[in-house]
Amino acid sequence: MNLLDILTYVFALTAILGAFTVVMHPNPLYSALGLLLNFFSLAVLYMLLKSPLLSLIQIIVYSGGIVVFFLFVVMLLNLRSPQSDRDFSFKGIFALIFFLLLAIFSIFGIITFNLQPLQPAYMSAKVIGKYMLTDGLFAFELSSFVLLVAIIAAVALVKKEESK
Image (cartoon, rainbow, N blue to C red; front, side):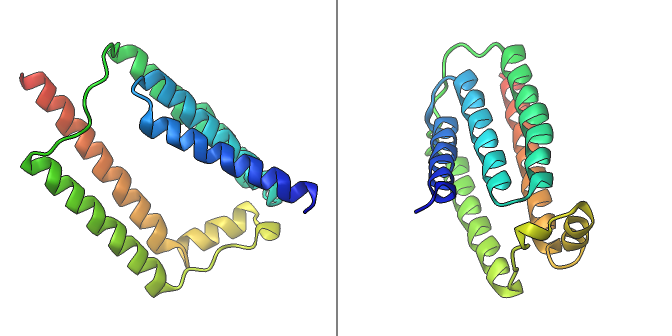
């Protein structure tokens, strides 16, 4: 095993630990910092895959923009005590079933459309743009749909809190 393999495993483990922190930590501030750790680890992995463009996009857009936005929202909301995430009501079970169906359909779509990953050594902005509008269009549209569902869910949660 060479140094590149060892670095890949180290940063892959760091990315997994950051993602685990996001999901499991009760304090939203530490969850946002875990997300930052995850994004930086992914940026290093992209760099190890010889894709400096994706690495730079990961740092600028995700680490620099989205995590700062999350931290701003957490500070603005001034969340003090963590809320329970376990919801065994009808809506909670419906949301779980919806998530599982979405995951199954996503996996089915990826297998059906036989999406091939890009070769990391040839990732330029032109190649990535062409891929996202041809072969990767299904995955691109699926990710936009998932983001739309997340935004609708966030608005519904805020409206529910305001009505109490």
